[in-house]
Image (cartoon, rainbow over all chains, first blue to last red; front, side, top):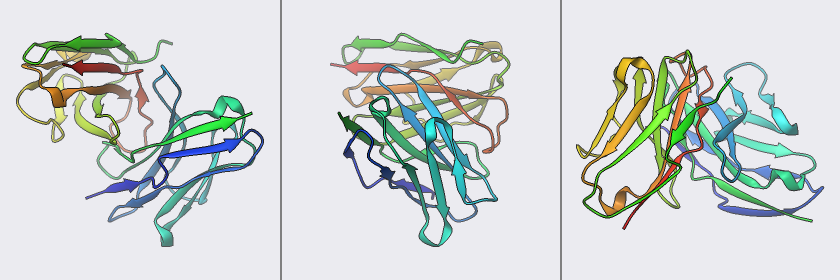
Length: 112
Length: 115
């Protein structure tokens, strides 16, 4: 069965600092990987996705993620965090079926 | 273009009562999904409609949950009778393609509290 682990429940970074959110997945075949963000009162918004090809994926709002098959990881990064990035971030995986399997989420707090 | 909408945004009911959640997908999206997040846990898949047909309902917790999608447009999720463990946030999502390659667009969720 597929699964996603986000080991960090809560992370605090200073505005302007770099950010890396960890995601490890378990899936028997080639996975399709996603990062979603949920701001307060909003639905989940897709930041980026990986299907195939270049393992470094660029997304919206200056985010990027790198797929590392050998480590079963898909970590999310941003070089300089803005206060508006404070939100909850979810990593998800799917395969040939369309249902998404999510991690438990990482809540990001940004200090000024 | 309007996004996925859900109604109500919040619902507080007593154990044993009935609640119906509604989801309006993006116009033209044949695929509609329901997910649920219990506090502190991951977002879990409940079921998937393709038009009015249930494609996959493997995530439905038990027979107290009934999902419908009349005419392949909006969908309702009824919980009857509600139990304490049904509390959580219920998300709806829609997509054009049923395959994993397609983005699922999520609504803001309905927060259900069962007391």
